[in-house]
Image (cartoon, rainbow, N blue to C red; front, side):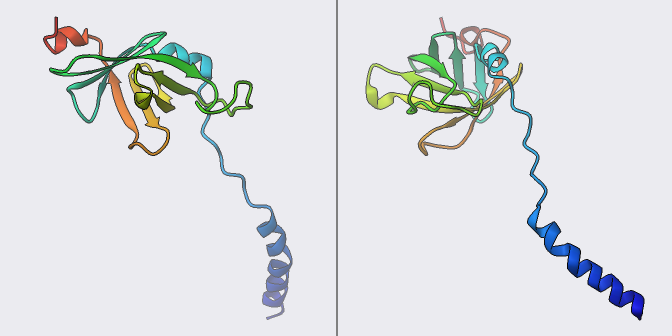
Length: 147
């Protein structure tokens, strides 16, 4: 019986200390912005809608949808949120800022992730869910019968 009392007392004495120092959650390793920037250019097909293709070049963001004219926007890849002032401290995240002829069509996307075969973008400002793409190895114009 005495052993149980000693065990209970020791647990009560050490429990508050353990509660005050919770384990830090492990954060997934962030992809280096430089390598992510190198992986962005290419032709990407939506995993949700095979007719939607995204072409990213160093300076352009081009949306293609089967049977529709291309929607091209200028592109800037930023290491800060699109509305943040230049020089703002960042956490290593990347954002894609697209600028269209009509300012109402300007967009900002958070780069969720990019690999050699996959791309995930999340529109900033609550305009939708995460967009997921797979890299195309064949020209989208040939794939969709475009000239």
